[in-house]
Amino acid sequence: MTRVSSSARIATAREAVAIARELATEFSAGAAQRDAQRRLPFEEIEQLSSTGLLAVTVPHRFGGADLPPSVVAELTAIIAAADPSIAQIPHSHFVYLNLLRLGASDDLQKRIFGTVLDGGRVANAQSERGGRTIADISTRLTPTGGGFSLDGDKFYATGSLFADTLAVLARLEVETDDHAPGEYVAFIPADADGVERVDDWNGMGQRTTGSGTVRLRGVHVGADDLVARAPAVSGATGYGAFAQLLHVAIDTGIARGALDAAAEFVRSTSRPWFEAGVERAVDDPLLVQRFGELGVDVASAEATLAAAGRSVDRATGFGDPDDIEPDADPVAEASIAVAAAKVVADRVANSVTSALFEVSGTRSAGADLNLNRFWRDARTHTLHDPVRWKYQHIGRYVLRDEKPPLHGVI
Image 1 (cartoon, rainbow, N blue to C red):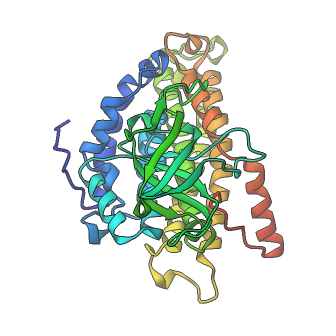
Image 2 (image 1 turned 180 degrees about the vertical axis):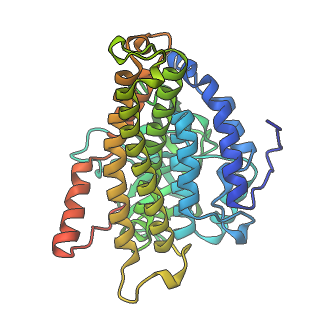
C-alpha cells in the first residue's frame, strides 16, 4: 500500500474503514508466521500509527476526526480478523484516550492528543498480581517536593513494548494540595527513568501483543500528569461500555477470520468425504450445511456487535438524540447491549475456531499451517473477563429492571 507520513490525518469513517481493510490484507499474510515465531509486530504497529488509524478518536477541537465508538469497534474487528494480536495492542490506547477526553485537564489533553496525532501510542500498565481481586491496586503515588514518585509492578501490560506513553493505574493514599486520596492514572513517557518494560508474556494465544511486565521504581510524575479515575469509571459516562465494546470486536473479528480461513482451506485443499459422492469438498451437502450454520453464528456476532456499537454511540453523545426515549438511561442500555454482545462473541469465537478443524479435515491440523492460532487467540482473549457475570447483569436488568453497576468493566 502507499506509505504516508506520521502526520497523516483521517477525516471520515469511510476513509478509516478503507485503510483498515487495506492494512488487514497486509497483516493477514504474515500473521501465522509471526505467531509461530512469536515475532513482535513492530513494523505493523508503525503502519497503524502512520496511517492515522490510532488517532481517529482525537476530539475535533484538538484536530482529530472524533470518530464514534461504533467505528472504532468496526476497525478493531477488521484488524482482528487478520491478526488478533495486532487488534488487541491498541485497545488500551483507545480506552485511555477516552479517559483523557472525560477527565484530563486541557493542558494534558492537548499534550497527549497532540503526540497521538503525530503518530504516538499509549498503552496500559494497569493489572497487578497478588491482590485479593483484580480491583486491588498496590502501585503507589508518593508525594515529593516536585510532584510524585511512582512505584509498583504491573502485569498483562498489553502494548507496552510498542508505546510512547504509559497510562499507569496507581493509588494515592494521602491528600495533597491538589489531589484527594484515591486512584489515578499517570501518563508518563514509556522510556522515563525508573521504567522497565519486560517482554515476558507467555500466553498460549495472543502471543505477539507485548502483554508483559512493567516495573516502576521511583518514576517521577508531575501533578499535571495525573487523571482521577473515579469520575470516568463510576459516573454515567459509558467508559466501561466503550472498553468492553472493543473486546467484543476482537472476539468477533477472530470468529470471522477463522471462518474465512476455514472456507479458503476447504476450497483449496480439503477432499470430499467418499460417501458424499461429489468431486469437490465444497459440494459436500453436509459440509455446506455446517458452513451455513457457522456463517449464521458469525453474522449474529457481527450484528450484535454493530447494535452494541450504536448503543454506545448514544450513551457517549455520538448518536442521534432523537433516538433516545425520554425516560431512557442510555448508559445502562449500552452496558447491557455490550454485555449481550460479549456473551455472543465469546460463544461464537470459541465455537467457530474449534469448528475450523471439523469442517477442514485432518490436513488442517498440520503444525506448519498454524491454524490453531485462531482457537488459541479466542480462548486466551475471551478469558479477559467472565461472561458468567454478563449473564447476571443482563438477567437482573431484564427481570428486575436493575441497572448494571458503574465500575468500568461492563
